[in-house]
Length: 475
Ligand code: FB9
Image (cartoon, rainbow, N blue to C red; front, side, top):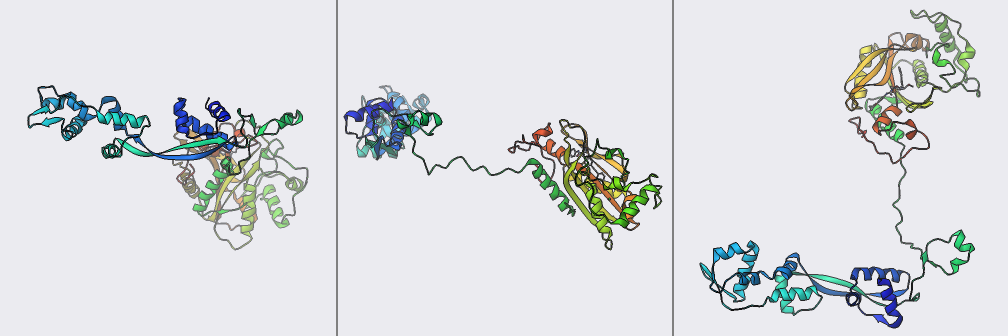
């Protein structure tokens, strides 16, 4: 309606001199007229020029008096011809109306404010203030003295009124053409594009806010767990006494590689010691008493534990004069197991190990309490378990306040001498180690119950953590 009014008017008239008067004459909201003028100006249908006028607008108090009358008028009308005791008059009026009314009515010489009695000094009065406020509200001008008086009473405040004068623009038409933003296959092939109006490209458009990249939730949790290890003084680092017939080595648990078929060169003296410890034992161990086969050991596979990497680090440590070390790793491991909602054929294993002289199970329990306390887990319990390369071994449980139950949070143990001695580590050196997965804590942190929502093409990188699990800011 506003658009037709503007374009229609300009069809027969040179100019809309004042958008405010134009709107008032047609009883159209001025803001609607302004929005249409801006849009038509943007497409060059019209040329609009700013008009600014300093005007006055009513304050809330001023607006009230246009309805109730001014306080002085209300007070005058509350006084009967014979007069009224002041306290009775006060009860008849709102406190602010009474206060302002007395002052203004006395100033106007409308009333006599006696000590006890209030009387009229004139018979009738006009509510000039209400009249002036209504004039301003209707956009009419009033005298400067009146402006000054109303402003002093805070009944009006200055406002800059903005409007436009409008003329035909270079693209003027009595009716706006359909504006499109895209040249499509359809309107190009049909030739319709010749009749269409294309929106001018707005080079100053800010565009959608730049969305920075998102770190994968696993990488965020990995970074924070890495920080926990570093705070505990562990070093990061990107040969197990696991018998060759151990079930975990069966193809149903392990991914063997066809190529490259065999592992790269090994230190043969070390291989010989490993063979011996498996077949006939040593270091007070009976060994597994079977024929250990080199070709089995040579098979290449995707690691099922990061402990494979730990043993390589420990072997290197044993080639130098012994110095205690604390290592950790967070890396992918691969298991040829049935996948389900919480397990895939691969996951990230977090592993920590401490290598020092005279370590005992107590040290392992202590370091586990320290590590898991950083994850907010302060109630732990341990259950004896079996790992081929650690003895004793313990499963780790933490009481989850949210789930109100004990949750298995990892596995741990002391590496066996059959693993450490063939490496060359001194007799009194022990290694305590533990492991957990990265996916389990991340899924709990993000409230995910299907691992495919965390790992794979469907990950929502805008995932927000729903739980926090540690004092170090994993939240
Ligand atoms: O991560 C596991 N659970 C876990 C960890 C943290 C956590 O935090 C929550 C916010 C509160 C919640 C749960 N687990 C180990 C236990 C179970 O989830 C288990 O069902 C799955 N385990 C994986 C292996 O099973 C395919 C998790 C993985 C695992 C298990 C053992 C090790 C590492 C990872 C190990 C080891 C080890 C042992 C001795 C010496 C060195 C390493």
